Amino acid sequence: MLRTDFGKFKYLGLLAALNITFLLVSNFTAARIISICGIGVSVTILYFPLTYLIADILTEVYGYSRARSIIWLSIFCSVVGAAVAGAQLLVPSAVFFKGDTAYQQIFSSTPKIAIAGLLAVLVGDFCNSYVLAKIKIWNKGKYLWFRFVASTIVGEGLNTLIFYGIALYGVLPNNLLLQSIFMGWTAKTLVEVVMLPVTYPIVRFLKRIEGIDYYDYQTNFNPFITDDVI
Image 1: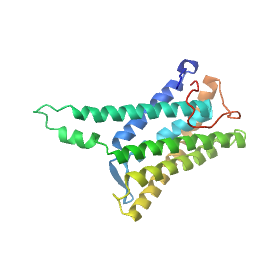
Image 2 (image 1 turned 90 degrees about the horizontal axis):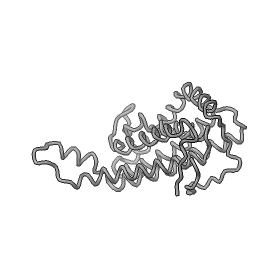
Image 3 (image 1 turned 45 degrees about the vertical axis):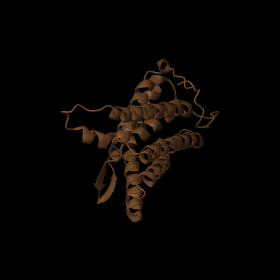
Image 4 (image 1 turned 90 degrees about the vertical axis):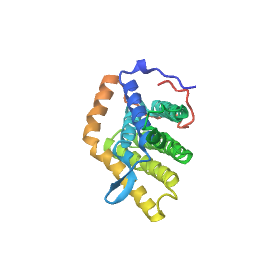
């Protein structure tokens, strides 16, 4: 069972809330395709990378175990949100309401997209946090930029490959699908790089205020353990 202790740290609850918010928004907007350099990608490319930035900060400051618990909390909220969004469509609209067709189209997420999103978050987030925690140990806490970028390359790469590979397979021609995966992966990683000047002071601030700079020397990295105190 997942246990929480947000009162122990001043900003842990805020980071968890932001992660859940960006994940929920991404779930409801993932099917919208925009064009970047003539290549079709999900509109979530503009804000979904923030969930990985938050996960990096969580793992770097509070450790893998607390990041893992927040990942599961976010996934739980995502599933509940998707269920509520789908269930509300079962209630008939008012006869004078003319926008119901649009609502049905937007919130009627297909099972394929729902499964793709869940698997992508599950695999990508845990791999991201695992890689960052391990690199922090290996380089003894040096080169923050390296572990943030390296973990994002792995996590976002797997996330993009899984989501696009499942959700858009058969929708886009294979050559365009590969281009979309590469473009999405590259753009998400660039967000991490661009945000580094902001990430550094945030990490320093949190470590100082929270009084913690966690190293996962004794951590059990099994992603399916959910009884950690966060």
